[in-house]
Image (cartoon, rainbow, N blue to C red; front, side, top):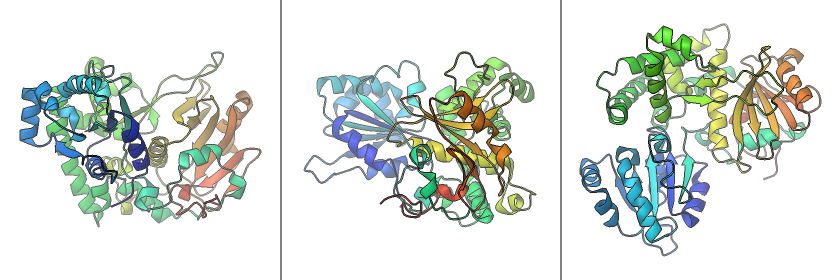
Length: 424
């Protein structure tokens, strides 16, 4: 079992917060993580585990939500709570009567905070943690170093990163991070797993959340979004291509977001005088699922003249999401694009408003023109600009000017802090 990097945050949250929610897509390892948070060895009562995937538990919860919650003694874990969102108000009432740290540990395979009337019900009583599929560092059992924080604060003049091997990167792109998929020995077996995964999500979660009987349009929409991953979200174009009214499209898109199957990355804007593109970018948050929907295998990707830029950019987005989820300075993630088509793929911003720009290049070579967007950001936002980084598939960390660096993509799976030139 791989060590999850948000585990220390979970332990801390349970020590002082009445309700903790682990949010993430199905099969990201939520159940495994929360079951490891059982008896903590401190003499507190052992944590009871109940899953709402169990028919009897779900029936009892739905039949009498208040009675179900009131009948639970001691610390309890409720897995897949989105299946009975009516439990959240009784949980609020129970917490208000007895505000015990760690009383309820919840997991959700749908973002319950997006469900009607839920976002405010546990305000001030609940901490929410995000669990994405396994990161490269988790898969490699590498250091728990937060690599988003390192991108933001790192002294790149001191870093030593192994070269990025193309075949290694292709394997990571097509494997993704879902624990069960990564354990499959062949591409065919992973493909079979992704087929079953999509069927399970559609047959269970989509039907329950949206009461949809006709599901053929959802897979088609997800397929279209897979081929638009890392691009600006254009609902009008997508509506025409999918042959769906925009009202229906927006409802389906929101459903896919709720299930963590797509991610909307907002645009960064702090200077009202700038003419910026405000449209978000859309991504699939797992490159294994992306490769499956696009029909890519390691062999077909290796046969291409170059790596697909959208897949590599999606890979970086997925890694950033996983590390931002346990960032010490609570970094936020954005994209940047002006109406004159100057863009930076990603911006990391801290709570002081300082920013680091990240460009992604799917090539093993890099030159000065690849820093055009970063130099623009450095010039126009000099008061808050920290550094600019081009992540590329090459071999060396290379300086390209003051606070501008080219960094190999293998940064994401370099094994230890020492390999990165950082203190232990």
